[in-house]
Amino acid sequence: MDNEENLWEQLAPTLWQYLEKKHMEYMTDDKRPISDEEWELFIDSFQDAFANEVSVLALEYWIDRYENGMPKVETRGEE
Image (cartoon, rainbow, N blue to C red; front, top):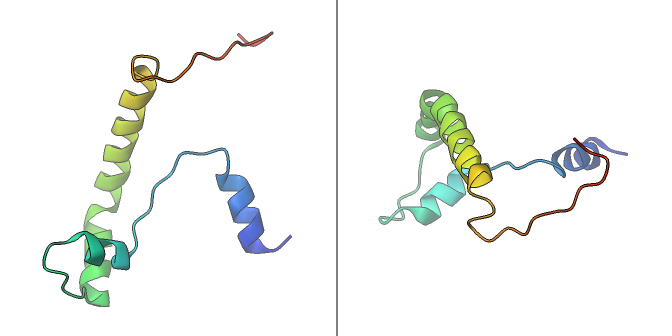
């Protein structure tokens, strides 16, 4: 198994989100290219805050999962 396959196997049972520079360029209104230097500064400045915000959002989704339409799963022998 190569490194990429190993990574995807590890990520399969996880909830994760990543953004590439091209994603941000596509999502912004002005469609300006983002320089590598600006993107690296953005990542350095906001990486921790992004992770914290996504974690808070995931917790909210988890707490409200049934109210938001997720079906309940019957568990057997798990407590």
